[in-house]
Structure formats: C-alpha cells, structure tokens
Image 1: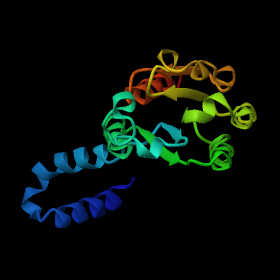
Image 2: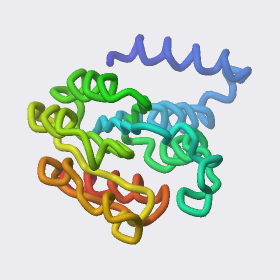
Image 3: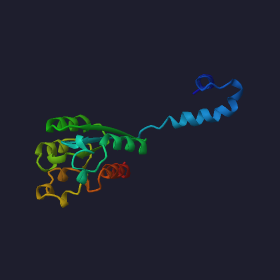
Image 4: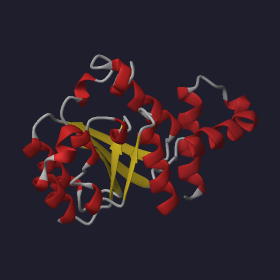
Length: 183
C-alpha cells in the first residue's frame, strides 16, 4: 500500500475513534494492532451437520445428551476457534441432510456429521459421504456402545475418516481439533 493510501486509512481511523491529530504517534501503534487483529483470515471452513432430534439438545433426555443448547455451544466454538469458519446445519429430514452434504461436499475443508438415528439406518447418507471429496468425521454425543444394541452398528463409520463419541458436546470440539491436525 502506498503512503498516501495509508495516511487516508489512518486519518479515517483517527476520526472514527475520536482522536486528535496530535495523538497520531501514540495512535499509530494502536491503529496497526487494531488493523492486524481484524485481519484474522479463516484458514479452514468446517461444516457441522446435525441430524434428527438434535434440535432438541438441552431439552431431550438431558441425562444422555446434557443440558446445553447446541446454538450456545456453537457460539462457544466460534469464539474458541476464530481462525476457523464454522457453518451449521440441522435437519430432521434425511433428504435435506443429503442435499447439504452434496452442497458442501466439494468446497468445505471438512464435515462434522452427527446423523443421529440415521447413523444406524441410512445407506443413502453413507452413499452421499462416499460421493463427495470433503473428509467427514462422524460424531456422537453419547457413547453409542453403552446404549441399545441397534446403536452399535454405524453405516457411516466405514465412509468417514474417523468417529468420535461419548464426550458430550465436546465430541464436536475434538472433531475440530482432529481436522486442525490434518490441515
């Protein structure tokens, strides 16, 4: 950036912050710090996709799924990982989950998928994951192996790069950190 453009940006900064021209020397360092801190450029784009009944987190079976609302948890994740763009989608409808996987499956850096009950039944979601290039991590809030027998079989695990479960909502954070290590 040439000097004249820099001065223009700097003068604009001074006026927005109600600073006087005499304070330029002190403010220059503040200007540089503020400017650099606002330049956090996300280096990764992850999409969290939640399936059926996960819109009820915090209300549904809190002894299994906890008391925390997912939207609040997502805000915490976004604060914790400002360098990552975290997009979120939830649906109770299998076809909408498949459409979202297709939509982001060639552009996102990773998908974190909690397909809920569809984990154990959906060949179509497994096929959707197989048909995309974006790596997918399967996530579960509860430890499915401590639950009913039908939950012990996942149709998604064979097509996911990994599976994380049993750590409550923290399973999502662990998936983010797994993607960070691979990125």
